[in-house]
Length: 222
Image 1: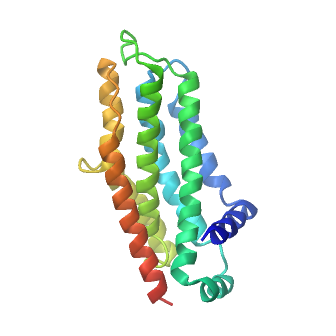
Image 2: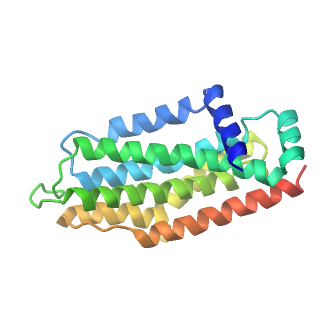
């Protein structure tokens, strides 16, 4: 599996298709995170912005390899292993963006409440922002796994489905991503830090289940 992940990572880097989702996340951060903004609000925004980017990275990775080359790789290592390696590569890229976005927010934000009256502790707030970003990255990976090959092969279906699912996962009240983001934004009103470990665990379970379904189907569908 390690060799497959290295292979998929090399494909991703050489394709330069990572540039578009990276630029999208950069635009999100540049527009929504300003110097001196309340830190918890900024962490919530940066985490939420990562969800569609993570889904896009999954699409990039699972469609990066030409069909003939993918068939050869699948014949040698197993289709589900190849698909899992592609998704894990996307998740690794999303995790790197989550950590980078958290670092940027921590560097330029004001560690105070939304009304700038209550001090917010540095390390607990940064931990909360990191946890929320990882939860969104995991759910975005799950969305990307379910909305692309092998379940949806046509771009005409995959792209609109990914956009719709991203909005539902981000804004639905029962979503772990929504809970993580609103926990940060709500805590900002009072200067209270909430580390969303339960939403993170739920996001990990849901993301793993989505990836498992995609990997199983990748072995059964031509």
